[in-house]
Picture 1 (cartoon, rainbow, N blue to C red):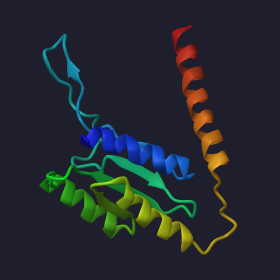
Picture 2 (picture 1 turned 90 degrees about the vertical axis):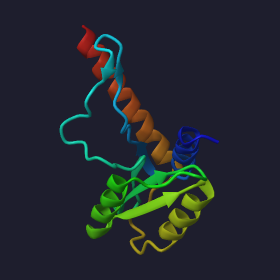
Picture 3 (picture 1 turned 45 degrees about the vertical axis):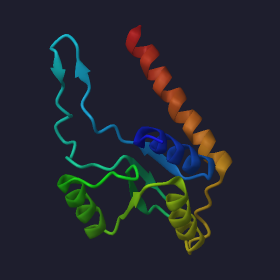
Length: 142
């Protein structure tokens, strides 16, 4: 399985379990017109993780996905240090099962029961975000 396929599998699994997360595109887009890669946006940190999310209690987490032979770059290690220094959770994963085990354990340990976050509300929020994005595109084109 490629890293890209694994990133998709992990995102789908987390969203299915009601965890709010998104994929961070951290590779510049190739411009055919200019025949080169575009620069990343100004404030995009080098080494940013593949997946970013928020647990039901508001805890921020990142997942860096690697294939069996993949290794973190120096920039990814620095990014990990910054996340962990600010009390965020950083997961270096080579399978969905690794991420699922860690996140499931963390969700079980969340003390604040008032922060309920069900699968249906996650899907509803995702649909809302998608709908807002489509509305924005439609307004922009008119």
